[in-house]
Length: 106
Image (cartoon, rainbow, N blue to C red; front, side):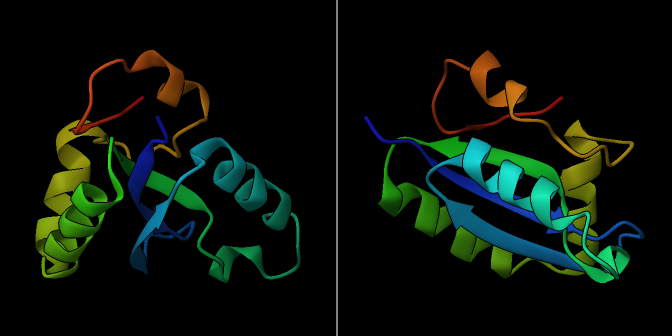
């Protein structure tokens, strides 16, 4: 079964927060890692700081739409709840989780 992921991505100084969706989080993280070596990378969104996994596209899309309605403060609280130091999550975290429809964290 194909997994679907919702994540919050930010830049190095946390000035921007963006909610995105993908099916292959390991591939997405590799793309971010590869792009982080480019010039002016501090303005780029390269740090995934919040991640949720879903079993269906519909559930992931519904959650993404819900998170997009959050204020910046609500998004920051959500991140700090499970990732208080805003560490960039690594692909190995996705392998630690067996449950569905829950957040995955370092």
